[in-house]
Image 1 (cartoon, one colour):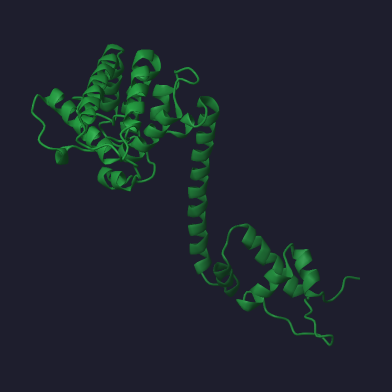
Image 2 (tube, one colour):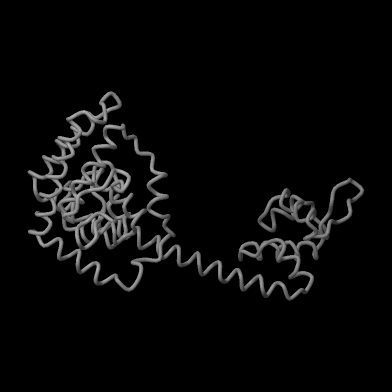
Length: 301
């Protein structure tokens, strides 16, 4: 013969929960609190157990404790709660689908390249293993955050050119080393700053010529044409370029900053034919070492 009543421990064990959870149900009025027996312990009968089992089933379905009270009270609010729950589950299912797609990209393309948007990885996936450096992927990550997948896909041309032209990669490495020498101990108006800016300008010009010769510029044109009608994805909202640039903790010395500004002014002068006005009119590149995405005319946006 089954017992007529059980202790809180027995009730919790049968329902698949804990005595602490059962006490919480009492506190919020979800489960009536039974009287204590002669031994001072609460005893739970058949109706209590049935109620406790329903509570556990609702919890497993994702129904909140407040909505459970409405259900037990016969309120119609439970229908609205179930509708909201269905919407929440649909959103979670969509998130899982996106996460699975990301995992599949990682398996197919490799990490961390596969974490970038498909528009970017599609342009780079043909490169041999090791052709891209971690700093290349870091720059693309920043660009994607600031300019979106289309901007990063355009910037990918730079890294494709560097990966396929060893002489351009070697020159980029030399310039990076020279940039590192522009520490806080270098006067911003040191002649070396002007000389290095001119070398950056020459290197950038050579990069653009390689991008044009390799047909990468034509690919950029097709990217622009195919995405003129709207955004490339439905990802997270992006902050403005100015806001993003002000939040990135670039550790640039005054000399390094002036070198970047002079380089941008030289590029603007070369591309437009108009003399540069002043450093305040020049936008900072996406990263200290890599040119940012460009417009169809080739001028930094």
